[in-house]
Length: 349
Image 1 (cartoon, rainbow, N blue to C red):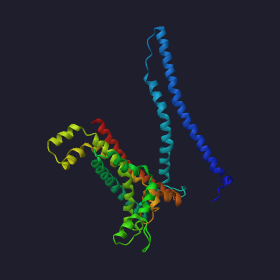
Image 2: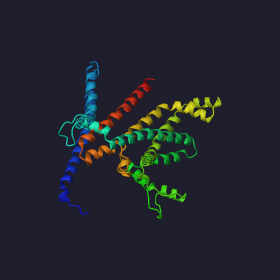
Image 3: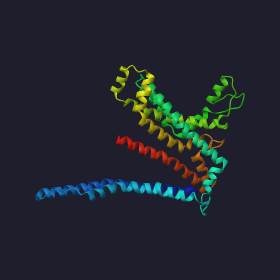
Image 4: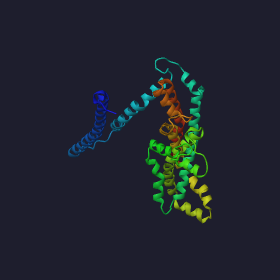
C-alpha cells in the first residue's frame, strides 16, 4: 500500500499541532511548578533577611496565602479533570436523551431500547456474568497463589512467572489465547492447544469461540489469566504484613493449616481482599479489548463497552451508544462509593 503525503497532509498537520499543544501545555505547567515555588521561597527568604537586619519580628505565614498557594497547585489538575472528565460526562448524558444524529430529543427511548431489545439484553447479561465470575475467580486463584508461594524456595521466580501476564496487553493476551482456541477441520493437524488436547484424548475438535455461552466463559478465562497475577501480588504483600507474633501464637495453640488460613490469614488480609475485588470489578465492567480482539462481539459474546463502541462509532447511533456509556458509568458509581466508605472506615479505625 502506497502512502501519499499530499493526501495525508491534513492528518499529519493535526498530529503536529497536537504534539505542539501537548508540549506547550505540559512544558508550561512544569515551568510554572518550578518557577512559582522558587519565587515564593526567594520572597520569603528576603522577608526573613530584612526582618532579621532591622530587628523587627519575623513575618508569620498567613493561611489565606497558603490557601492560594495550594490552589495554584490544584488548579491544573482541576482544569484537566473538568475538560477531560466532567464536560464529556455531561455531554454524553445529554446525548443519551437524543436520537442517533444528536439532533432531536427522544427522552428515555434509548434507555427503553436498552432493556427491551433482545440483543442488548444479552449484552447486559454477558456483562453481569463477567462481573460475577472474573473478580471471584481471579481473586480466589490469586489468593491460592499467594498462600502457596509464600516463603517457598523459589518464591521470587514463581511470583515473576505468575505476574508475567500482567505485562501483556489485553490485545496481546487475546491473540495468544485465540491460538489456544484455534480450530481446523476434521482430519487436519490442529494448531490450537485446546483442540490438540481434545484430539489426543480421542475427541472431536470444536470451534470453541462460536459456541454460546461457552465462548463467553472462555473469554473470561483470558481476563482471569491476566488479573490473577495482580491479585497474587497484592494479597501476598498483605499476607507478609501479618504480625509474626500472631502467627506464632496460633501455631503454639496447635491450629491446623486450614484453621490458620480461615481464622488468621483470611481475616487479617480482608482489607486487601476488598481492594482486589473492587479493582477487578471496575476493570471487568470496562472490559473491551478482549472481546473486540477475540470475537469482535459476535456469537453472543458482546459486553457493554464493546456494544457502546459499535452503536456510537460503527452504526452511527450516538444516542444509544451514549445511553450504554451512561449506564456503564452508573454501574461503576456504587462500587466506587463502597470503596471510598471502606477506606474511610479503615482510616478511622
